[in-house]
Length: 397
Ligand SMILES: *Cc1c(COP(=O)(O)O)cnc(C)c1O
Image (cartoon, rainbow, N blue to C red; front, side, top):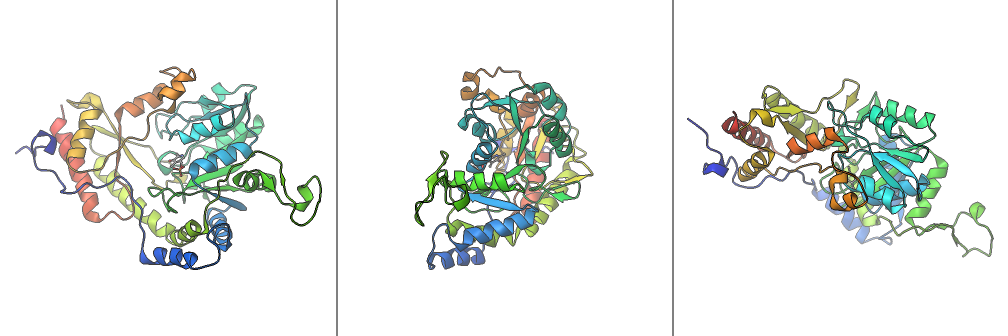
């Protein structure tokens, strides 16, 4: 008997929509926020300091600077790297627009290097091809939480005196060759949006081992103002400070930092759940010829922010769009990460042509993101697996 997909009039696998990602907030998270609301500082108080120290410690970096969101973290890192008008910065097209937008904020030019067919991360060989004498930095993105080829990328950067800013918005807790992501290049950025590993509502962090970059990040977060006595041009008294650069108000509140601190105590548990769910999906989908999965590496551990399947549409009677609609109708909250950045109208308007990164465009045309978040129940996992099998089986050629 044919198990009819809901989109064809069958009964959906689930009654309620399962989102693709969601936060996990417990009573203790709420209490730590309430504690701050009753305290003297709502912003730039002791919670920020503590959150930064514990976060830096967790990822193995010397410094961490908390900011308003992951995009602000990228912007601050782009500023600290000295990216300015005329500078080219190489990044991946398979990412959220913010990874490239931060280059534009600083007046720089994003240059897109194609991904690898195997693990869907930026290809170091493609980076080399895109180098020019205007190249200033590289922004690799650890797509889905799987670390990109950092040793190769850092080596290209070292040889060409470039700054590396890792976009680790997907990769809190990921491990590359035995080391946690966060202290392995010049700067690394994280996001605390509710779908990410830990949340502060909105929030972000930049980590670095470099004292100079650390001070530039601090300045940028608060209007470009410096109060460090030894960096001031004059000393007019105790009240005196100088705005030496154009910065922003990109500060995180103490209310948010308290939530972040509470969430950080759970990050290993959250990661373990993400890895369990991913392992179950891999087991379930490995034998389905209509599905390809991201290739993992023995020398790295993904943080599994996203679980993406690539459809071998040649083996199906319908395209990605129909499979996506069919999974939605089963009440599985599927998504697509990402539209290659340069295909967005704004980027096209800047002169980036279609067809620029063929591997990225091919992945985009066949990918679907499945739900993956720590609070999912084993039944939720079963529902996703069942819905995918049902839809694929039905549309099989
Ligand atoms: C979420 C995300 C960002 C931006 O983070 P926000 O906190 O939403 O500003 C940047 N890059 C990638 C790859 C992301 O997934």
